[in-house]
Length: 523
Image 1 (cartoon, rainbow, N blue to C red):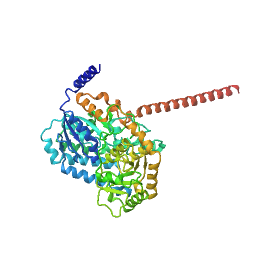
Image 2 (tube, rainbow, N blue to C red):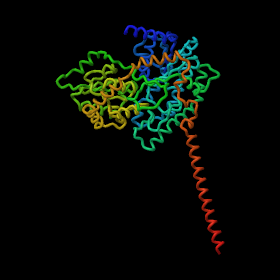
Image 3 (cartoon, one colour):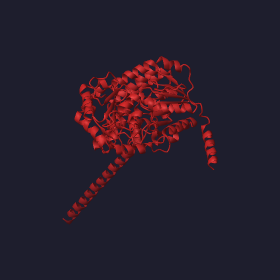
Image 4 (cartoon, helix red, strand yellow):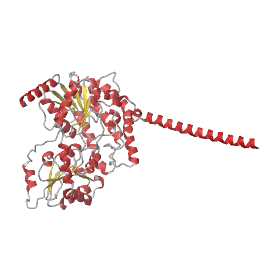
């Protein structure tokens, strides 16, 4: 029986795979940090192993290149993105409380990065080869992907590597709920009435700024892709087949989304631990009699630790000295300072997943980027979060909400705050909570990579994806919120009340008139 069932399953699998083997797929980052590529690479590699042809355009190379993948890294594009990200994620900007307006900053940057990409020599040379592309898998954050997919007459899947943010509500016509927050306005669930108002207006704010920036973006796409008659950017977004989300109900607040949103959390996560370099392993296991484990410190690939103000560096150093029985590993990213604490090991780079899966790790001090927090939850490591920009404030708030982290403001951090946070994470209920969340995070009907591959090939198999899209995708912003209905009901109510009041006034006048007439007759 098992043999027969296996044969039937294999037969069905083969039937469903026909017409999708050997598809030509373009992966695209038009503005992204290296963590975005880390998130998407496993899907690209999995599709190659399934017989598909993958071209990858990004501002950075893969850590482990795939020889079967065509990697295109335009030099001017790489330089622009590197300089831009280094400026935006400069920790001194946060500390100086000069964090820019996300509305204006990101829409302008996305359009500029798209222009740099489309006009680069490498991209134009590739485009002149008239590549046959069946599907584009593009980073959701910038808007460049939908234009490139239109030029190539290809289907498109968007891949969201950050937390759900306000722009996505109007762009994809998803339900807008008063009780859920967005990564660009990270309120805690028990919002005040004023916070609910701001959260309700946020998607409309994004829509307003998007509308202002659309003419520039559309001109960039027309010129860069040599398209004289380009549909509006809003029409192009209607052509999207699917959206992959890298979060789920652990890392984000539960949200009602249409079927075109598919959760594939943590594609990059490794279940099998790679051995650590010998020097790191020896440091972790040194002083066996007094060794109580270690804490890993990394503020991400974009934050250069030496750029931290001296005061902030001293806060970290003095905190490390305060826990002599705990080892500390710090990803530094620059020239090492002198007079380091004996229990501190610095390096330019650490194999992060191997570190976080180590048996002796006690906690992780992080800026709260999505890949890092997913790795920590997956491996059951409590966190101290120091958000800097983007979705990191929301991530830190969410981690606190589920009881696996303590969030601190890096611009105001003191020794007492950091030492207290480390002590609480080491000895509080955080370890128990994160182990519970790790179990929930891993408990899925399919491996996320299998889910992602299946849905990618589903899009390749089917031309019509309208059944997965929201019912209100053709409605205006006010129709989707039933404002026309509520206005009609309100006006009807006002009219009814007016009629009742008018009737009462008329009745009173009539009665008064009758009484007056009666009195006159009696006289």
